[in-house]
Length: 376
Image (cartoon, rainbow, N blue to C red):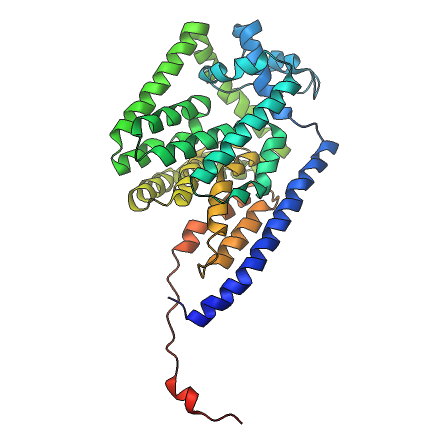
């Protein structure tokens, strides 16, 4: 515990500082528009849209990187490779958006998934202003699936206690779009003994995969597995992409080392998720552990995925009465900075749960004799 007087002083100081941090966040978010000088908005969504288009026009070429890039045409031209590397099960989501022109689909996609992400974050306990975290604006600019995945996972966490089957369905939907993000989820659910949720997650995944096989056949799944190492090789030879990737694997590649050494973090990442889900119900810590643990052992994830942590960042920033709050604020500001390699930003993002475990400051008893000393 801290002394009441120091707590009062901290309360008077933390609110203006928090407002200052949010103003900085708002300015950095608005600064995302400066990226229009380098590329058009929605470039990443164009890849998702083209994947859905390929499923309609020629499913046999869905993982032909050049064919999918040619389908996009705009915004980077046919000579710039923009492949589709999501699993075939994700096509069930992307094909409907491919039925409309890409620009209309991009706008609808961003509004719908962004709104869902905001709603799920607030339900999970994040302040409404968490969307000011700059990586949220960047993810919207890119048009990635980050909002959808984050919203599904947070919604599942919120309803998990009362509706374990519904939570499993939501987790299963997310896993069928980007399975690497939830590779450690089974450990977390087992740590809590949520067997119904585990079964519901698995059944949902199997049903969606079976539907994709019924619609497009089994061959796309083999082609997807073949495309993953080709995609990793493509990324590893693009210096700018490696610099903006957030995983330890990509950081080692950036430093011209063997990224496989990052797999040594797997036991620590697994233990982190296990003990977080077993010992605390704090959703901020669970969000950070689940996504952070996955990124620690994934070969590839780009900086826009840092938006997944925005609700947790907002939850920690809202804890202004905690004496550790300056540490949370420093971590939030550090997370917002563009640093190369981007793994540094991930490392800073993962810091608040560690800061929260710092021991409380000891209470210093007031000296009663001090009131007996006359003035002057």
